[in-house]
Image (cartoon, rainbow, N blue to C red):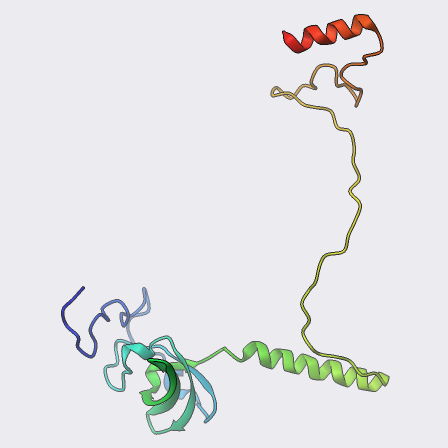
Length: 183
């Protein structure tokens, strides 16, 4: 482990650009609109040294609390000893991207609103709560007698079409069964 404890120590791989992701920064990064209250993911771009957040915030999700000319003010939770503090940092737009953390919630909300509107038109009241799946329904297993198949793909001896291997009703057959068991 390195001895240095600098501001950007141990970030050789953390801040490195991805494979085939080097080069110019797409214009979408600069043209994207951020509003107060949006959720953003902090993802440091190693090619831009200005406005770079500390390595702790890399990969964290926060909420926008301020928008300036070239930077975004992001509020991120940080655990310090036994408490969680809301830290407010300013990060350049190259180091943030819109978060998808609320995407599933927004889709579910739109779907629930549609279901409620349909139920209201029918004169019903429905519950949109998510419920656990619960146990699977029971069923009966139908058993069939199958022929035993040997290693060479041929039916085992005495087991053709589901017949029992030995019928022990005769003394002679009992002797042959005993001989078969011990030889």
